[in-house]
Length: 217
Length: 101
Length: 112
Image 1 (tube, each protein chain N blue to C red):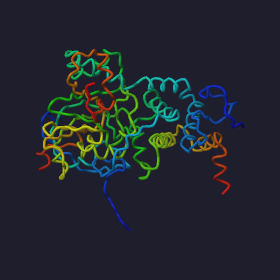
Image 2 (image 1 turned 30 degrees about the vertical axis):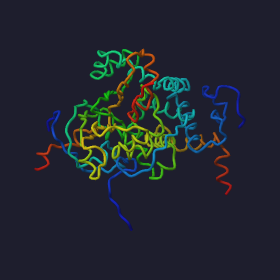
Image 3 (image 1 turned 60 degrees about the vertical axis):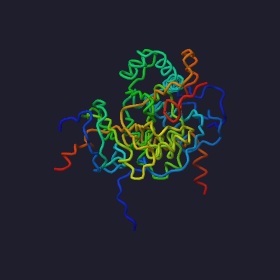
Image 4 (image 1 turned 90 degrees about the horizontal axis):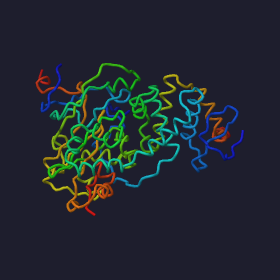
């Protein structure tokens, strides 16, 4: 059985006469769980429960889910008051208007205002609006964030460079069950002249989680 | 037990099941705390049963409950009006009258 | 013998003390994306696993799993455990396949 790297697509269909380790990660160290992933995947393919095309398709779909999707939704809400109202009252339909099928997600949109700043966490695991924003950043899933943001949110926000006035409530949302959250940040001052497209470029992923506010250019 | 309405005061139960080996979505830090129903999210399959692969069970009502941070953490250092909203299943909540029984 | 009956899972960390948040992010490796994709297919498409089973499996990992395993390693351990428990795969199949994929990984353990 050969262990050389091969020159064809490593995700090809399972062929019982063609055995080799899948080494497409440029790393010689196949750790225990990476071996397990390969093994389980091959077994599931052998059993015809899944196939390589489906895996590839899921990965492509996930790669296409990026924070810019969320930024576009926010920019539209800032530019169009009716859309903003629809977004808050019926998020699933509103984001569908922009072409996003959020699948099984039950979305809640949290509007930041002069009196409330919202921030989202999943203390129990890592629930996140993946169908819009893609995969969450490592820190969102970390022990440090999950433990501390419910108990000392203002200190955590400070670590992200965000200071919220004491007069403004900091409201934490623990994504414990079937709902998923998108923060609708406050539109920064001095952006009235900007087009929707320009607004999109101001809005980063971290503002949609709520650890930062959107800054004017 | 009839459903809770928006604005009702509820207390989060402190009961087991221990997790693991059970699975539940009521964080430890909120048990025993009193909050207000912020909204009814809808009815969903019970995660405590889904965790064992048991599909198609009765749906349970999910609420979002709002708590004052200073009610949860005795040493809370943020602002007095800071709050936290948490999704909690109906069977983890009781009205304050029920609790007195 | 110290006996502690607190019913708090290792995953249930809201409110515990912890250090500074490390904001460094890593690009997801292809194998990690494959784990994620596999889970999506097993749950959403095939209804063979629920996301709740995934979570429960992660919660059942030893306490040091949160510090000594990476995120998708925990997922993989949980997915595999559930597939074994529900009989989708057998331990014999899994063992043989893992050995087939990287024979020298296991033989180096045996030559001690």
